[in-house]
Image (cartoon, rainbow, N blue to C red; front, side, top):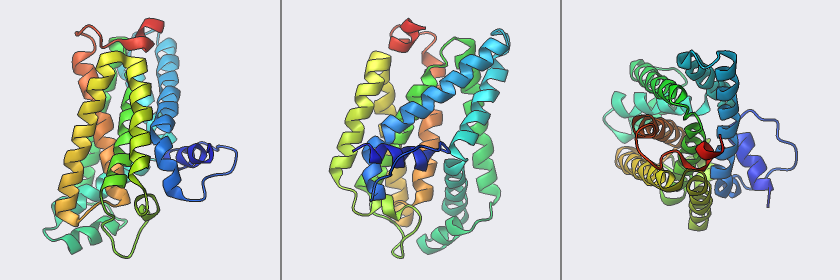
Length: 260
């Protein structure tokens, strides 16, 4: 059963996880939220170490350390999907051309703009969270964003008839995988963040649903790039919501804050 977790961690990060992986890539989907939690905890550790090294006096430096650490930890895989989707969705009017652009390894103007904007907004949110002592919301953002990919993979068809890098995760993934991932994400984020975690989970799910509907209309479903783009957008959105409300509203601290 843990083979799915091994495959999820190997897929979502550079971690050299020992053990045998799942025989089918889709079998890792129920573990994506758990894998996200593990990766988020690693980056939360990076934030704590950076904050300690800087004596808590430079939250922008802490934010930079987390941002760089996240790119390294995930190989920038989902950022690549974000750039490809931006180029394809905004650089073409028809489905066939959009899919062709997304498959092109070169990056265009829309892709560069999307990367700059998402990373800039995320850095601002991380700096705010670090300054407020709420960097643990990195964990919440990783849980919700990795769940978002599962929901799209389970409920939407694969957009390329010829297959592609994400086809193994999307094709044949039963609804039960999405339900298990949602249940595990709910337990993790509500247990760690309370009612605020439930609100973040609902917001992330809603954003993922909108992305899925747009992708279904534009290209007929999802691809690996769409899943990656969804992950990046939802992660950034949760961090922004936490930065905007966590420092001011009661209950946004959660269990992790009370333990800190």
